Length: 223
Image (cartoon, rainbow, N blue to C red):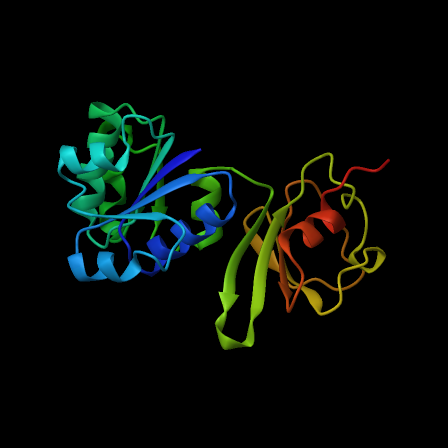
């Protein structure tokens, strides 16, 4: 999947890193500030392009003509709106996601401005990635500081073998714990008797488990 992320703030950097690390996406991160763009080149797997994404020539250089998804997470709402409009109307990008920094402006972020999905500034990285791409059922979200602890998310489908089972029935890798389960948008800190359901979003904190390890626990089909 070809993805363009506009804005290399904390959220943009994390999105670029997470989406590119999946190995299944071509990710271009567009940043207007030259020094920041130069700093990020080489430190992220995503391609980093310096330029003003409100300029159609910059979006074209970023690959907008062939992009599947564009996510605009700049710190200014007017930038996100202009970029969204260009992406949808000028480049016909199939899916456009934009961050709303000021809640008073949320009413503007509609299809009229080319926005398919509007996400508030307070939304989690997980929510934004899911709305933007739906590229995977298991995603490594963050590496938490120097401790080397990972936060991994997985969403249960109707075919996941964990559906209908309690957490105590599942054998997590050593050093891994279920930190929360999000059901119908509401997070819960579950106990061992908590029974999993379809569409549950499970957040796992782990010292060493990989995304594949977590997927094997929650996603593999029963033989």
